[in-house]
Length: 144
Image 1 (cartoon, helix red, strand yellow):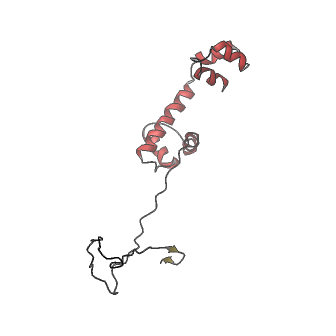
Image 2 (tube, helix red, strand yellow):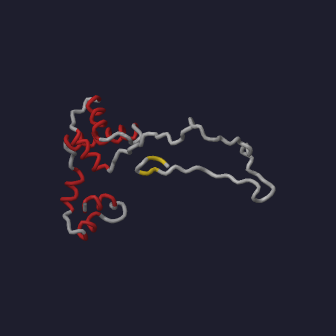
């Protein structure tokens, strides 16, 4: 973490000063900065980028099982648990969508009042026209 701070601020302050203040050796910093990434780290970053692209291509709806299927189809050999771990590290969670529930019953024998207003809501006299809306509230017995 100290090395990352030094790297991010090396254009503002001298590297040797920051190493002294943060109590790290400058040779250790340069060794860390110039080290090559391992094949495992490169593969992990590549898989994470694929996970991000699949996640946003699916409108954030795919979770780890579906993303695993997509990755396996692309040729990556990876388990669902590993995909779930990478998604947690990236802060990605699938969005759950609720199924559409029809709340209006148009097939009834009740009186249907004609539309006298015809969407003309501009009136000249107060309290001449009254309108309302029906709200459906879901309870344990169903919609009311």
